[in-house]
Image 1 (cartoon, one colour):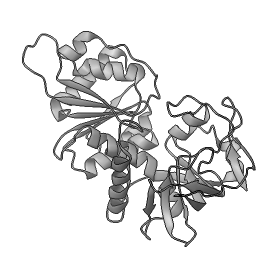
Image 2 (cartoon, rainbow, N blue to C red; image 1 turned 120 degrees about the vertical axis):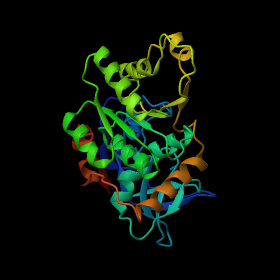
Image 3 (cartoon, rainbow, N blue to C red; image 1 turned 60 degrees about the vertical axis):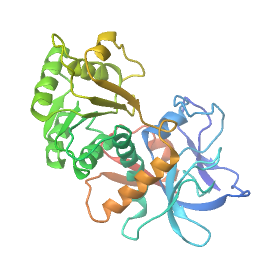
Length: 319
């Protein structure tokens, strides 16, 4: 069969032939119709993600849309290694198999499910309740823009959106952001901007797609100095590390704030929680429209398009 194949961690996948899968006991074959190129897919393909096996070759892709042998149309994940989802056919178990509502188109579902799940599960991990306020750190990318909309749809009182792209930040106002914060400011100006926004809107949950210095500054803004009363309980949920893998965390950051640091991802969130989040999101999309930019391309173009820099548009490959 034809597939995108990762043959080296320091090069894009190549479009070539790969042995077709054979289903074992408790498995089923899926004919793939669409698979999204998510950040986690790129990280696994270059070997930097914590779920990487370190083994080559393999087919990239963590989720997709396709049809079972009985023609049931499904959203699915959990393909058995070395099979991913960027191929004509893959093999899966039964842990992540969700029938798709007729109103949801294949490429849209394949592109939106993973970024939507990232913020939906993170809000759950942060024990978000309607009426609370949310900071989105890294709000100008595909996942961040969707996170703003999801937080509002789930009842956030205020959403503070932080990012670097000025035009994308302005556009977030129409998607539900109550305050926008430019991460291009110098550190002291940024901390002051954060604190003014928090004073106006509040901050109960932080969804962090960036980590690195961006997270350090956000944490500094939450920190209290010169006060002895307990601060507002803030749940800082770490989702991605586009700005760096490490941070410097001062001890007083934790002692001077009512701060909780929480991770959200495969390993910290259960498969049941992930499955429930995607199911709930798909149900919501049938009545609540989401602004989501995606484009499709034939899988044969995978090498040429793999390193495209447009973070505001999700690329979906179709075998």
